[in-house]
Amino acid sequence: WLLALGVTGVAAVVAASPIGFAGPVASVLGAVLLASGFVGVRFLRRPRSGKAFEMLAGVWTLGLYLMLGVVPLVWKMFL
Image 1 (cartoon, one colour):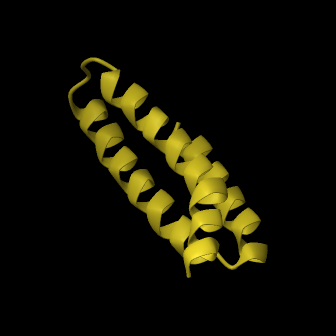
Image 2 (cartoon, helix red, strand yellow):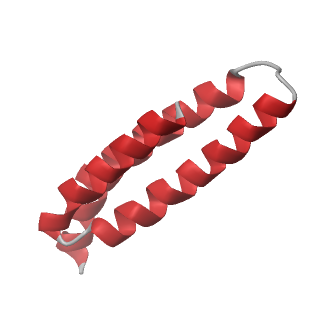
């Protein structure tokens, strides 16, 4: 799961480079990836429900789409 997030994060940063938005994309997705790592380690230490994985997967998807589409567009319009 973390490997898939990491690979899509790298792809997102590469995709954001031509529009000059690689830094913000890396920052936001890096923060979510870090949180995902903590959740993963916590789960390995004490397996419980996978609800946290579901929530973070949704946050990752939403963050990815927003950071590659809506946020750069709005950023360029107002700045």
